[in-house]
Image 1 (spheres, rainbow, N blue to C red):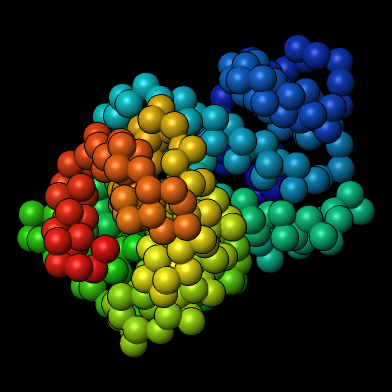
Image 2 (cartoon, rainbow, N blue to C red; image 1 turned 30 degrees about the vertical axis):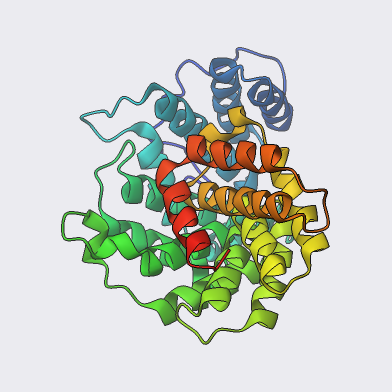
Length: 344
């Protein structure tokens, strides 16, 4: 197997990696890591290849080989993602990720040399989980691979490892089971039946491992009673966790919750944080984060309009409402309707 013996099983051409540098495998790996951090990707890949080649000269160290393969795949995935060009043949990064995604980590320790460090097992498992998550992401979004929600779900379930694995995979499973628009027949994700209880299960597992987006999803579902009974105390707990983790969706809904329970000073506090998000930052936000940002800014506008804690300022309120409309016109319309109904 390539973990311990020849590297012929790997679809990587190592013919150009022989004797380019007088250094051992670990040194080549360290140099490659530095090059990757400096975004010198071609040099990084070359050095990772050299690290693999030179690993043949030393006692087997599967953790190092696995790291090299994963990092080459990661760079190839990132660079192809930026180019947005989908290859007709199976991309090399996909082959490498699938090799890692199907790796049985119990094999890593079998017949290993004294170079194997037991605590590396978790690092290897993390790499396997990340490879599986990446393949699921590519299939879910149809980026560089054909859009296939069932394959995405299959990879994410593997990566989640019954709640012990990759937190991003668990969060993605939660979204996959809960997103309303999946029920539209024109959307490929409608092939996966919605299951709100299953969605909450995965969001809870992800949030327990520190995923701020999952915590926000739990807080929002508790706040509005989606998939569970309305529970302001539970909503407050999760929205605080999400907000402290920097999630804009959580911050916006926490701002609204404090406004709802008339803790206006807290509402203004969180709304003011959102007011400092620059317009340039809006471009990279997810749909949920934009919705949360719009909600928080609108609530802050209401506080200024009504003079809640802050000095009354119709001008600043209007500026905030206008900003919301620039971010998302549909969100502004929906929030205006909620205001007219007396909810805001």
